[in-house]
Length: 113
Image (cartoon, rainbow, N blue to C red; front, side, top):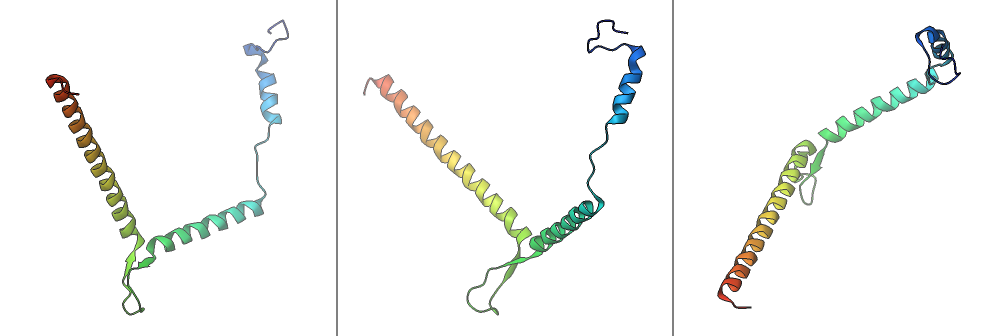
């Protein structure tokens, strides 16, 4: 063996490791709790499907005028619009920064300011 009683083990001490593994038991939930979690997962999945397929009423006033648009069509559209707004804002800020930089270079070159 290791001789010093320290934490290191040699190949001959594999029996100690096997006994330790046998003493360890995996964590487990009671069967009823597992079934409850599975029911919740199924209900949540169903809710997600229903919410995804549900429409958003776009009409004004009466129910006859209401136009329903599926949320799976709306969210990508909103994401695209937000992305475009961000890109446009970045372009405007870059343009303004370049204009300011060029103006500053001209002032320095001409000796004004």
